[in-house]
Image (cartoon, rainbow, N blue to C red; front, side, top):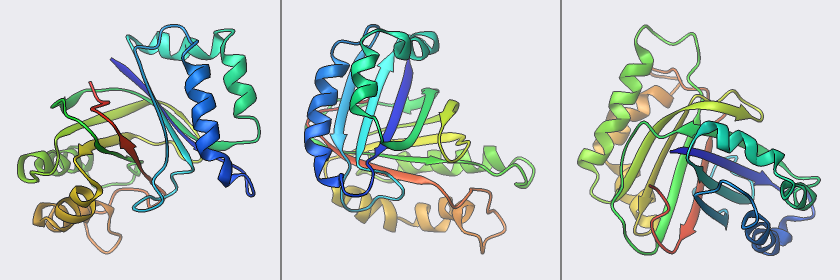
Length: 215
């Protein structure tokens, strides 16, 4: 499975359009070929960083199918809706994860770039630290850690770390305050720690879901 994730930022003065635009994008996306699943939602107004206003997550059978979607004639309607908007896009194959189907909740993704000057074996150490989280944080019901293979936007992002929770409290509460987070994983994101290898310009995007959207 290949995921296409777009964080859409509306220009100043158009922020109030996000609900209506999300509705219009859902209609337009329904006409695109090759899409296995599609979720579009306004971005949460809290617990987000550089996330824009709308998040759009689509899945495809392959990377080729994901790249071909913008060549579909129906994409013209999407392009018209997004005229003037900015944001970021990453494409990735889910390589490590676990999905537990459930009902309503929230989905969160941390999209980040590992800096090339990181210490030897830093990427493996960071990934191992993140993978401790689902084993110890009970609030995480589904998760995936994936390397980025397609990227458009301000940064050449390298990873997507995504989870689902029953509520926002699961993210802002148990996840963020758990010792594995602040005592181990967070060191790779903290410029005052020797393990620091993650570019500070990252994206944290959160949106409400009515069911599991991860596969």
